[in-house]
Image 1: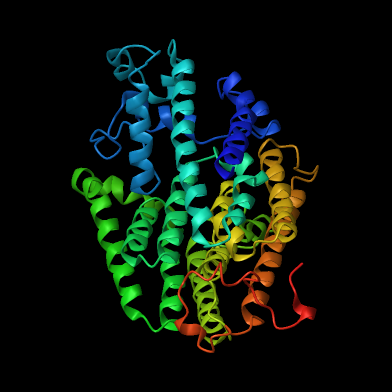
Image 2: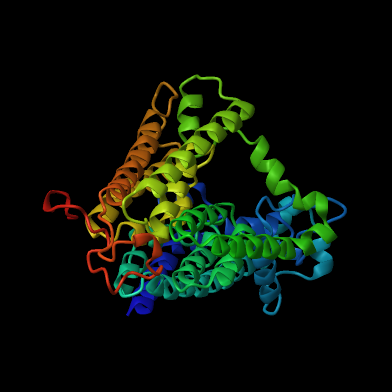
Length: 437
């Protein structure tokens, strides 16, 4: 049932992208007014995939390097190789003789770009199915918690904006493996996730707190070593074939300024001088302080927090202080949120705020939210609404952790990681006055 619901939601998400595909992704009015934008088709011609180039071997610098971690680059390249089986554009010789900017205008290339998008969508669909499967088993005894992910309105809107569902797959896989006492596999999943996006690395912090509370340092050691080894092995082909292009992801994020969706952008648009160096320093300090606070919360709570609760708090803290908060980043939080706070009311309140931002960012990029005086106040309000919705869910999770009562066994730190079946009220709040809605 969970897989079927996800299939329907994902299919509707594909339909939502139809207006952009129907106009060959070329109309700004359509992609912003219909909110159907996706990075996927533009990078097919913009990063050399239309010529089926390995993303780390463009020695003549004909194309810009992929500004993503390696597994996304590999994933995009594999999709281009599949697209090459059914090409509709011109020959390789014609493509090589055409400038990258003019590539999309070649005969048959519009159809080929759409083919590439659909192939990528199918591969991401498989990733989503895997994520649903893992989430259904990540909280033993409570498989239906995953329904809040499978039926999520923000999943419908965001699944095909970028390649983030690949990272979601590995995040869900890591939670599933840890819940079953498989730290080696959990570490492998974290390593794969870190090679896809940065945030899955933060799961190790949640694993650390869980291992300390259970007095099992061997668990976190195994997971951390496995994560580091897998991350290095996955990155090795890129490092061997194009180290300079491999570095682009790291330098790009270090040097970029305040970007879409961030509170830093609100400050910049309101006239404050926020340089990349200032943002890097201040956001780094704030994130470290937040992590220290989460560590104290996790270690001092009466009852051992669930891994998803700690992971949700860490990732939420990272996103709130980060210099960019793209609309699809809601997918980073979604699998963690549905396990950390499996209450539809709170999840829908949070996603309603995300929906406000999702609409606002495209309308603002289309130029329709800019006021007559040239400011972006409505868009800035949408950013604040989004963050407030996230902070609301953070407050609910913190409350669940702090007011949870110890396990009846009297030694909660030694309870097995999968408590679902023995814990129908999984947050076990201390009295009726604190009961979950």
